Amino acid sequence: MSKTKMKNTESSKYLTPILLVIIVILLVIILVICLKKDSNLSGSNNNYNYSEDTNQEINDNTINNAEGNNNNYISRDKALTIALDSLKINKSAIYDVNIELEKKYGEAVYEIDFNYNRYEYEVYVDAVNGKILHSFKEFD
Image (cartoon, rainbow, N blue to C red; front, top):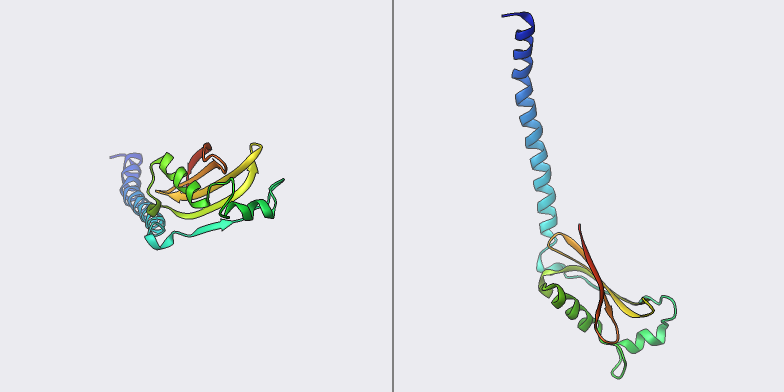
């Protein structure tokens, strides 16, 4: 056998185990990342953050009235239910929920952000009539 062929055979003999080790390490890293994300899906992590953002023309009185008995706005919980129903998602499966009342599209809008099934969702619900104005999701 020539020296060139012998060198190639010897180098490939060591290259294959090295590639296998690299592949195993990458698979372990991916598994750890997936397990970490799955641990966020437990039912105890439904953190609802009802922040009261006072953007633009919506003032403190407007926001306070949104939760009052006699007002023109649907409740935050109703807005969340509308958003989840439109996406066919169960409320118990979401986590890291943030709901803000703000001024967008020239109207009072609930901006609803939450995570579900490794995606981050953002939904805008009209605070008066409950109509979905905009929604999208991206891989988290």
